[in-house]
Image 1: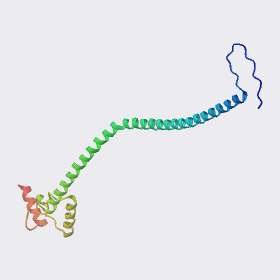
Image 2 (image 1 turned 60 degrees about the horizontal axis):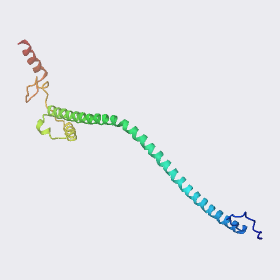
Image 3 (image 1 turned 120 degrees about the vertical axis):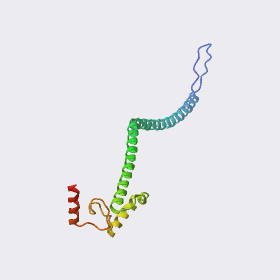
Length: 172
């Protein structure tokens, strides 16, 4: 580069003239600084964009969970009512099982002449097993109809004897 002659400054001016090569060097240095700052700004912008996208996705997840939470909160009374209904059904089932067990015990006691106190501690499975065993063996308690009206007899009455007894009672 060639140096130019310094320009004339008006009298009394305190301006200093700088050669062009120095201005170009300063310009290049400032452009490098500007490019470096632009690079830093781009990096910071990318980082900020990434964090903002992360924030948006977390906010969407939070909103989704809030909506689900509200939906679940609406079903809490229904859930409580269902729990009460289930507990009642379980109690009813227990009561019905107990009643059924009593009926099976009574049936075994009346059909097979087993004392009820011997059956009171038996489970339903044990009672069913006992009943099957008694059926296989063929043991049955004689009913009142077969023995002549409820009186337990060592020998069953014949049909002729039953008729005589019935006629005698009818004529009274």
